[in-house]
Image (cartoon, rainbow, N blue to C red; front, side, top):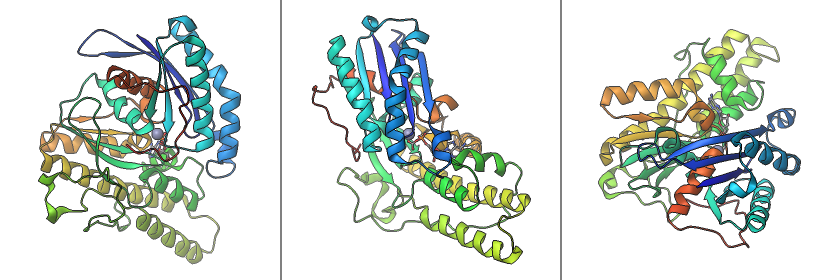
Length: 364
Ligand code: KG4
Ligand code: ZN
């Protein structure tokens, strides 16, 4: 079956066609994947402006979808289902994709499959690699989320940890803003960090020692982690962000300028990036070891980070645990992962009624 994926949860309008290959080793393949990024529009404002994002999705969604069909060399009647990101995300942006997908599904008389954005990120790993040894511990690290899942069987995502405050990608974007760098900050910090000393500064990262009293009921800490380790599956990045901000403000006063010298910015980027990567990987690998996972997966926009990728592979080799990362094009938001997650859901019999609504706070 060929499925059309539609993704409009934030500032990328994306459409993709993914199909079943019939090959058990690599069950899904991408026929096309088109992304219209709004980064240029939001850069001027230093972050995503929700109203501008929804308006741009409306402008782009038809052209992006037609292009996805054209690139795949297929017609509308070749589609067997439509998958769409139902949430979480910016509600105005989500509504554009959901309304568009609903009308397409009704017009073409094919099933509509609702997809959780983070399930899409997890499935990007299966789309790229075919399969992962299970159980796998999967870290989804993006601009809006930092979540740790255990995947024990295909399509089952058990949330065992998450950030208590800022997402890791959000910390990248906010630190970049403090340094006067362009939005989105993650790729810029990644690039500048290559010319800096990752040990120049020792920024603190909070370690959670207690259970999150506000955790959603979906977060169940597996017994094997033990009560002594409660809280160890959670992350926190707002303290780190504040520490970097304080350092930058103090240094600007000290040098008496509006911007810091380039070599100092590079050192701050490299040291901040090291702190984030260590915090992400320490937790992920500790949890994987304690749960006896057979693989570690890392997905979401921040999984494009070069230090995170290199360190994750190195740690995996050191402890004999295979590490899976998506291709770079599948790390940041795209519709191929939504189509793949749609195929997974559809194979489990999940479809949506025509009154499907967007849900900005959808939980997984
Ligand atoms: O998954 P994604 O495309 O959108 C959300 O679901 O949020 O993730 C976007 C996030 C942004 O915060 C961006 O700065 C970050 O991913 N990002 C990176 C890199 N590329 C994108 N962070 C660090 N290093 C990168 N190379
Ligand atoms: Zn995302």
